[in-house]
Length: 500
Image (cartoon, rainbow, N blue to C red; front, side):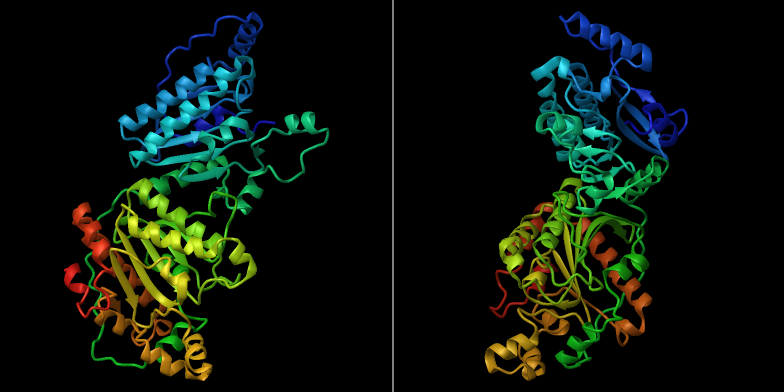
């Protein structure tokens, strides 16, 4: 059943000669002689003293704490000694400020030790929670098989979760299910590929590719030298009609968040889904950096053909917000949406509640935040990702409670009034800038479609400069400024006076 062995995985994962064991000798449980015989046989067969090995090693030059299960040792099951070892290793990693890479393969709780073993999952989870509270990365690679309490505790808490191809991964072991219910578990459900399809696993990786993935993530999270390129400012003399921007923003060939990542980001590790059984291609979620500074990017993807943003998309966005808070890195949101979904499914999926919770998360987030109005900014779908410490806009980006056609239909029963409504509602980036809603307008010369790569570089440069400026501000001042940002909107006082 099991995939790659513990020793073989270490051979392909860590830098040669870098392993440092953290394992103290185990204390065997008192009592059952039959169980002690099983332990002796497992030790003789594997050469290990327990089902888990812990220590520190270099992975592509990054020092990492490693938690490694050995399925050959009583099915990788977790008893009291194994739980103690795992929790101690996580707490040592926290004290030494090391990222953790967990590599479980396990049938779950060690049945020979019963409830005492079962409760080890709480102890391990508590250590992981403290590690993440210290803003340290916790990465997981689910191996074949990973089931039971291990999957339902420290195997499901990763900031990023990978899985071995073809691995059996699930809560209830298939043998247990068949014994309890008298029928096999439905095929194809408890596989790493199916979990990826449902947004529970970020990627399915061969063991030989895991070191590169860890290197990329930890490399991105390490700040690099910042670029000093100038980005230019909006031409205040340019006074194109608002409808011009609406039309420009809707062009199918306009660059979006995917092109921004491709051309302007230092690197990007793409993440997948909510982690809670949902995924929506309308939201791009990535660990990336601009100007050498790491961030979590949550972006609305204009190229997505799955329709307007639904509740799952916003729950996926909220995963990005949690990641930014957990890893203590800035959050960058990219707004480019024709609006949120209008459907029965959206209503029953709590769309309005998810918009509200996104706004609440954005307002309360401890991490620095930057929002970018890259194109269309329609309705609640745009508002959900808007409130930030700094708000940027592409020249032809715009923001409106409804599409101008919808506003015309409400006020005049005439969608043909859309150009007049766009002007009257002052939805243009330049109008938003003059009102103090937007801090910086990024020029399009004359249009992003005419210069897609250069435009993306320009956006990336402004993002890098904005992240650098926020990094120099005190957290308390920055959060207080964000809280005040919208208080004076509409009273005639420019918001930008508070942002200086």
